[in-house]
Length: 256
Image (tube, rainbow, N blue to C red):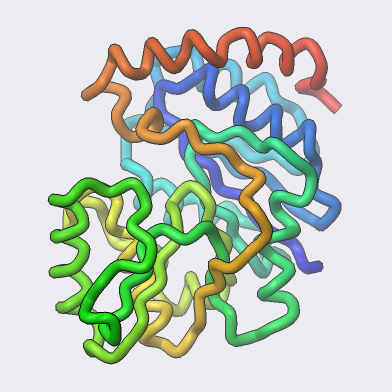
């Protein structure tokens, strides 16, 4: 398989960022890859810790302030190796649980040049069933109504619309560049910039593959983009991962 640039965005999530990166290292992909961390101006020690990582295939890009996820992954694209043909985008609040997590997402695109995006299904909307969602992810009623209206504006009503989770999205570099990457959060409610990217890819004729092997990346959800708004939730979840982070730090060297 050709090279993949993994772009991870962090912001004030030190323990989760440690789990994310060390678990990636624990279950190393067997395909060519690099890891690029874009840190959105963290003030919790994340940047200091990230600077201690000296892996050959690791790049750390500290930002002075929080650009949010979509702008940060757009920045990450420009630091990607020129040899990379794929991007894998993710948040800092994930944990890799099994080997093959990256290979499962890249392999379909190696086999079929028309597949532009692979990932875990989020919202799949089929107008032929009367606009009923086949998969509603974890969205509440208000968000589902927003997405339904959003889809109405974007595609013809006979189309089936597929989107994937923003914590688990693999895409071709050439598709990303053709579409100009992600649009900015300011245009959307919550994280619908990935919805927009998936829809634009389908309008260009690319297919999205979501019937993939069982996802091997666990997403803690809501931590990476709600830190300042939901501090109690963050602290409760952080306490559950500190021990695991310490364990991984003892097992996995930060310097090659």
